[in-house]
Amino acid sequence: MMTGDFPLDVFQTLRTPFYYYDLQLLNQTLQEIHATKGDFEVHYALKANSNLRILETIAKSGFGADCVSGGEIQIALKTGFAPEKIVYAGVGKTDWEIELALNENIFCFNVESIPELHVIDELAGKLRKHARVCLRLNPNVDAQTHHYITTGLNENKFGINLSELHHVLNVLKTLSNVELIGLHFHIGSQILDMNVFENLAKRINEIQNSFSMLNEVNSQFSILNCGGGLGINYEHPNHIPIADFKMYFETFRKHLEIRKNQKVHFELGRSVVGPCGSLITRVLYVKKGSQKQFAIVDAGMSDLLRPALYSANHRIENLTSHEPEEIYDVVGPICESADVFSTEYQMNQAQRNDMIALRSAGAYGEVMASTYNQRELPKAIFSH
Ligand code: LLP
Image (cartoon, rainbow, N blue to C red; front, top):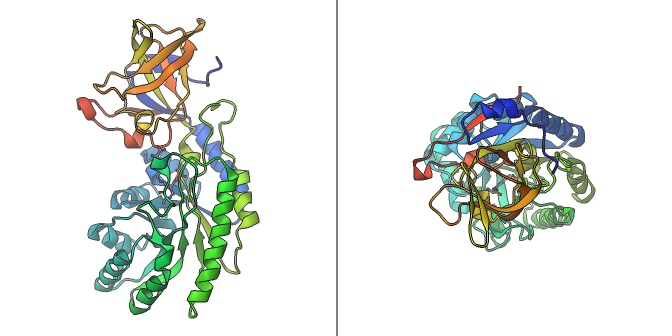
C-alpha cells in the first residue's frame, strides 16, 4: 500500500496522538488557489482549522477570513488577517460578538435573519458605527452531501428564506445604520459534483433577477458571496492532494452572471487545509475477536470526530509495517461504541507500537477535538 511521505524517525520520538501538518502542501495549495481564482476574492473559513501556524501561513498569502464567532474574529486578527477582509457569518451572533466586529471595522456581516438585522442596526447606532451586511439567502439547492453538512435547503436553519425577501427589503429601508452590500449563499460542504455548483450559480442568477424586480431603489449589489463547499479526495490523498480549484472557479465564471462592478467572494475551508493534515497515532493492541480483529489505536473520537459523527472515511495507513495486508476494525480507546475510525479496513499487518496515519484530517479535525474522557487535546507538529 502506498503511503504519504512522513518523517517516521521524528514521529517515533513523540507521544501520540498528534496532528501532523505538511506546510509545503499547504503552500502549494495556496499557490494553486492564487493561480486559478482570477479576480475572485477568497476568504479562508477559519472553522475548518484555526491552528495559529496554519492561520499565519494562510494570512501571509493574502487571503481574507470567514469567521463564525467572536473568538474566530480575534484569532484572525491576531494571526494577521486584515479587518477589511473579514466576513462574519452565523445564525446566532451575540451582542458582544457583534460589537467586537463593529469596533474592529470588519468588512461585512453575513446576516441570517430579520431579528439579527434589527440588533446589528441598534448596536451599530449605539457605537456610532456603520455596518455593511450581505443577506445570507437560503437558495433551496441540494448539495447532495451528508445531511449533517447540507445547509442550503428550506428545512435547514441557515439563511433567510426567499419568501421573506420582500419583507427584508422593507425592513432595510427603516434601518439607518446598516448598508446592504450583497448576497451570501452557502449550500453545504464536501461537494465534488460541479453540477451542484452550476445549479447554485444559476439559482443566484434567478435570485438576482427577482431582486432587481422587487427592489426598485437599489438592485445592484457589489458583492456576491458563493460560500465554500468544494470537496477533497479522501480516498487517494497521495495521488490527488490538491482539490480541483480550477474546475470550481471555472464553473462559477461560466455560469454566474456577474454584473458590472460586482465582486464575487468565496469562503473555502476544507479544500484549503484538509489534505495537509494527518492524525498520527500508535497501535496499542491487536485484539482478535471471534469474527473480527481490532486494531486498537491511541487516538479516538475525541481527537478526530468525523468518522463517529458523519460516518466519514479517512484513509488509514500503517506507516511502520510492510507486512501483507489484513482486515481490521480500527478503533479508539474511548468508552463509546461510535469510537471507530473504520470497519473491515485493509491495511498492512499491524502490531503494537506501529505508527498509523489517518489522512486528510487537516479540516474539521483538530478544531473539533475535545477532552472527553479527560483526554488531553492532541498537539500539532509541522513539516519544517
Ligand atoms: N461558509 C459557511 C457559511 C459555512 O457554513 C462553511 C462550512 C464554509 C463556508 C466552509 O465550507 P467548506 O469549504 O469547508 O466546505 N464539520 C463538517 C463540515 C462542516 C461545514 C460547516 N460549514 C465536516 O467535518 O465535514
